[in-house]
Length: 332
Image 1 (cartoon, rainbow, N blue to C red):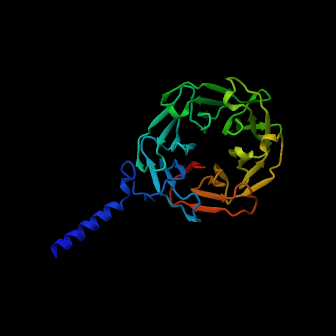
Image 2 (cartoon, rainbow, N blue to C red):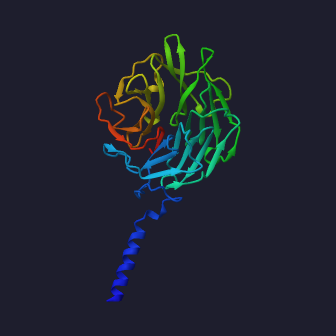
Image 3 (cartoon, rainbow, N blue to C red):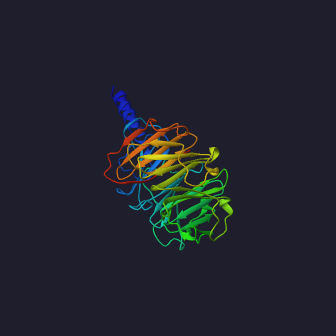
């Protein structure tokens, strides 16, 4: 009888230990680890954490966080992120540096960065980054009329001078850069920036042969002009499509065959959102668009992004966090 009771106690203890999630990855923070690899990452600058979840298509309601990253890789200044899903590396902007987390989809708790990328070429807080995983190039802008390109992004660790420095001008006037996107299928660089003159408020400038543009002021191949305020840009290179966050309206502008467009072109499709979009992320394989709401900790998910338009269903995820969501990245 005693042997039976002892066996049952050992079995219960083993079961409890097995269900604790293995400690996550660095001490844990009390955040549940759902077991599946995280697919979506959100920088919460207000709480100095990066939260993530495994289900890329959650139901509406409270945002279910599967993992929370904290530690020296994370700060309260995280304006952008990039995720290399094939290598499972998360690039997190930390003020003037970029922290890289390996095995990002399964890490949980307090973690030190696996790599740190800094540069004397970056004199102030980074505004936006884009990781070209095909050419292995990291594009960085710090809000001036400058885009920096760092080669061999997947191995950088330490301080480096940019391999190329691109000066973004329009009509011989500098354009402060808001965001960058690279169509890796066609090796095309898109730059969103502010003009504020001549009836044009913001622009998206297109540059061909992105990976080989030499240092200097590149020639603009095409441009889209806007009377409104735009911010984040993401795209689907395989389908020549660009999504642009319109901060003058609760919407995302969608341009098909974007490489052929130029001038004050009206977006053929507009995705309506409950609030102003601050940051965007696109999962082309999943055909899903994510948007962070400006000023609040809500996340919007739009399925069938390739055909979505005004009136398309939007899944709203509301966070209980008192922080401030500032960046989002996702697996394709």
